[in-house]
Length: 141
Image (cartoon, rainbow, N blue to C red):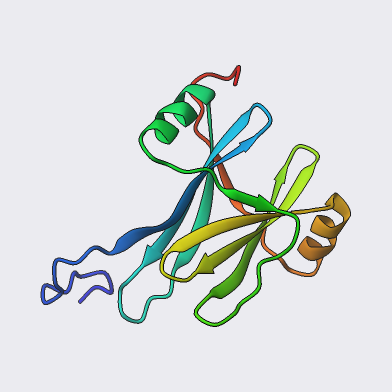
């Protein structure tokens, strides 16, 4: 029997869900930020993917209801009913951000501005760099 045989007793629930999602605008650069989560028992997957998109796509996503990501200067803090987890370092040209997953009644991606020196130090100490995918159809964006 193969390790990958499908267990036919599993329900019809979704394997993956979208958690936090938002639109990050940095000058004339646009990014869709998506958290992918698995709800399968015994599987703990929670990954952020940052997708570089063009302005036209960003406007359409925003018009469809995708809200802007929160960008702040200080790290969010856990408190009663609010969980905060550092996820990764995002570098865009000469800007660096620490990405935090903030969960209370809903998931939220929070970007915190940090210096390039701090970003490099955190990466050297083992912090992950965020996964970035370039999905632009127009290379002029």
